[in-house]
Image 1 (cartoon, rainbow, N blue to C red):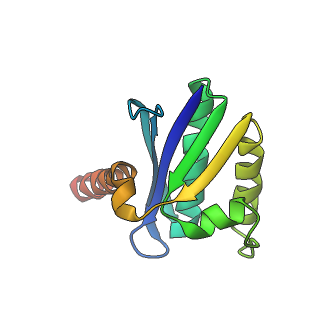
Image 2: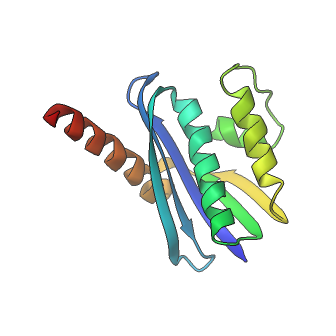
Length: 139
């Protein structure tokens, strides 16, 4: 089974409060799952890797054999495809984890789109960060 995994990670401030999210759909566009996760304080790039890992985990849980990852981070996509080296120490283990996770699928691809074409995953990231801010304000 093939799924499309839209991923996004974001940090308010860089580093700052961060979240990761994914929306997993069928090739026809039917939403199969949505996940978001607060990450604490980290960088935007680390949040993007966490989103990728969250999406791949969700795809495995659905029983997918093929994934098409769609995100707005050109850096992450090019690092995963081996076009860019991973120089930042905090990202090296995440890169290794992501490439190992991708290797568990029969086929995979990763591509970038403008943020506007990744709006559902972006909205989940922002909703998670807004909820965290509201909860902190109440506490």
